[in-house]
Length: 414
Image (cartoon, rainbow, N blue to C red; front, top):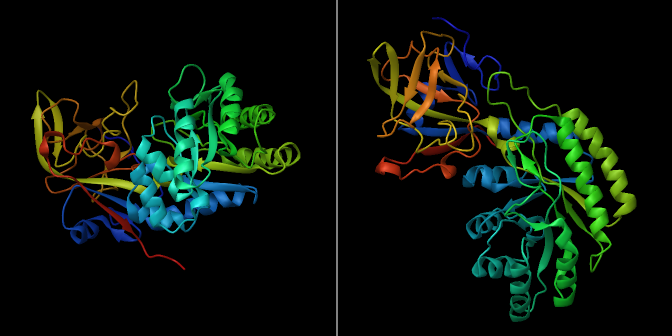
């Protein structure tokens, strides 16, 4: 059976003489340069291009932050740190990485439930904005502030009563481990004022991986309205309003790339409303996957071709231990194939085949019944849309197979 290439609608990587190109380098040459498979490769130019696309539609007054959790590779973080306005972290280790980039502490924020005492102390000492997610965090910061002689900079992460409709992961609405329920925020604000912490604003993140601009605009509008309502209870003026992110990327057949134009137009209106109702507040977008997801690929090498009762299996040296998301075990309810191709025969298709890894589990599946049957031992299987939630979101030590390599490819531009 012959079919269209799986990558037909995702053309961010050029193909020349059958070879996928990463920053202009043919895949076989890149693999030789790295010296081993499996590996992730991220295209520096595509990262830069994505930031430029966002800057073109965002109001100048809206700040752009990168959420490190999406891809914490130091070279990627270091590159993006030069292009965005700030960084968002979710652990003490990510905080250290953010500070190492040279980004000013005032432009770094720390979110996540269950921050440990040592992490709160570290964040307070560094002078970053702490998005508090419980009364326990608020009360724990007070004696730390006294000990260090620094008022803790805090914003309240709010669990709103609404959610980001049609989002891949819902981060707000209903019972959630994230943030403080909106109806409880007035009491939390009173506690912040009583304890003398330095209140700065709100963080309202309602969902992720959304491809519908109307849903994103609706959530942003509701977030601003909620922040204006809660500001009446705040111990000081709101200076920061983090609207979260939610911008998705296409992964599967039928997915359409997010249309940025309506979001940009809506943010222009929101910025004007915020200027009138929260005149000291800066609006911030916190994006992760959208900045890095389409700029990365995962590459593994074909080890064997097996036929079992009429079905072809392409056995590779990588798998779910490196790319849990592509295996369908990272948030998918019904497994769908990521876009997968044979990177050194990228202009060809073949009979249906499945790509499996070396792990002793049937879950180790990178592609199920795709037109990849033209692959040969030694070829390169490539999983596109792999720049976000890759190695750091995968069980790399599972069954003690080797970890994968990571590289950032392309020349840095002045």
